[in-house]
Image (cartoon, rainbow, N blue to C red; front, side):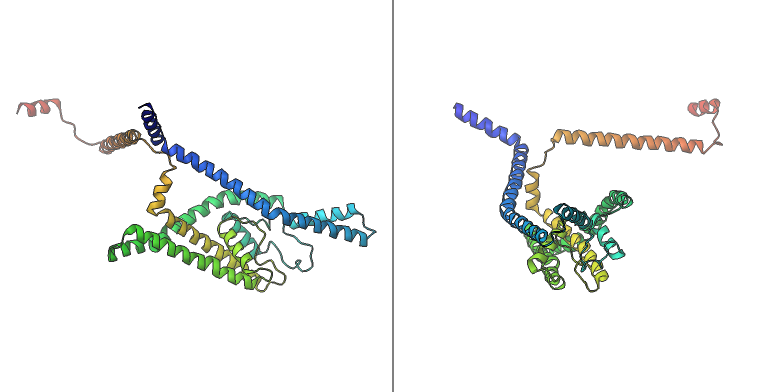
Length: 336
């Protein structure tokens, strides 16, 4: 008897705080996923980093042996300056000296990466004025970009998602939930094909040092706004039509970002995902909702009555020549 009562009380406690338990599991799962990623990246990349360090050490030692007139300190000072310039997108190599990082097309590409929060990091402002302007430009531009993307996606999703689903539901009588799931999968496949697979094939042809996997990696890193910066198109030696190429990449990034947001919004509107998201949200009590509604109604009613009273006062103020009735006339009218 006591065990059944304890079990029922535990079940009741879990049901009352179901959202909190789900949220705790969500936080725990996210932390475990972070740890899992760290373990995998460390185990995969650490051996390659060790090999690269050994290779660079051997190259440096061989260079110092072949050039005995150069000290190790002088070489390290030179390399530090070269690496510092490379972090700002400036290279001392002869095959890269012809590409300017701050011509109009490169600056347009940089502005698009800043506003879309991609930020490859291959080109950064050099001057203090450029850094200050970048801060001000981003503070205004990033919310402006979010507003622009929200407005565009809101209009596109009506014609791409809601109307097709409603048409098949009404015209053919299919279940709306099933039609929405199939439509989301088809739309996701089309987006992956048009903005990942086909552009990856194109980049693997246009970029000499990229294979298909590296090109697909660049497309995913860019359109997901991760922007690691290890692969940036249009930076090769003697790149043909570099200005036009940069403009095309900028248009691709904006269109791809819009397509990604449309697909995400389409999946978020699925009934099953809405129910799943509600498991982690804080549920409002009905009494609180009713109190908020009553307060809103009272405020709106009082504001309407105040507006009506002010309108009457304005009308009286605008009519200064209204004839006032005498008290005797009022008394006579009452007697009649």
